[in-house]
Length: 281
Image (cartoon, rainbow, N blue to C red; front, side, top):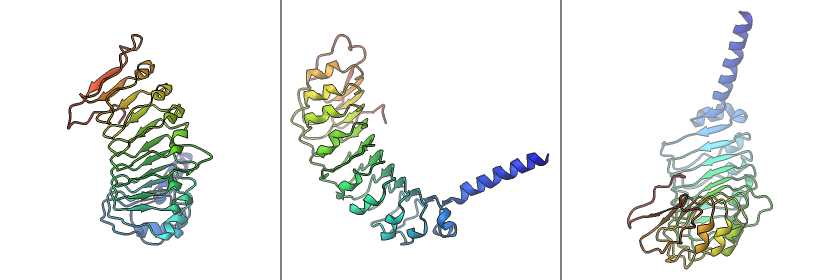
């Protein structure tokens, strides 16, 4: 019986420690100090963050979604151990080069902000696997240099981006690229280097053509080209062995189905004004 009570005591202590590592108010955060692992303050109409993040050196995750934050305080960049950053639905306009401080960052969501500029340093973070920049006002992404690539998912949809950085075509682990509803006019033939690509969304752009080299992306499963600007799709796409879903509009001339893949490949014509339901989302 004594052993049972001891075990219960250990479990309760562990549970309390886990709770103590997460703060939902600034008061709780300051109480925990160096022990703090996560801050989650959402739907609180925050317009600014206090400049106190240097007191949380072991912070690994922040969630400030659904607030009104416009700027990040200098001390925020002292949290070198951050792995997850969520600023969904705020009012940030710039992500500057200070983002390079987060060398352990794995996930970042800046969806639904007012971003017009994003530092190339964001894409250069060595452990970053997911970047979410959906629904902003970004018109250009600068080229970037990386020695270690980890990116698996990039969502830059619903912006005003004019071109993809050349470096993006070197992302060997990238499986998901959503550039839907932008101002793209060109996709490089270097897209063939994206050997892990499974989901590619290029609808609502101004592309002149889809490069034949896309057929080298042998793992591609889902492709959205609705009102992407292209009329004729390359015939080489019919040879993709795993391609299951292709979304086009009624102006598009599709590729001829490969007899070997005709039962797998499904081409869906999406009416104007409608958006395809993506099974990957």
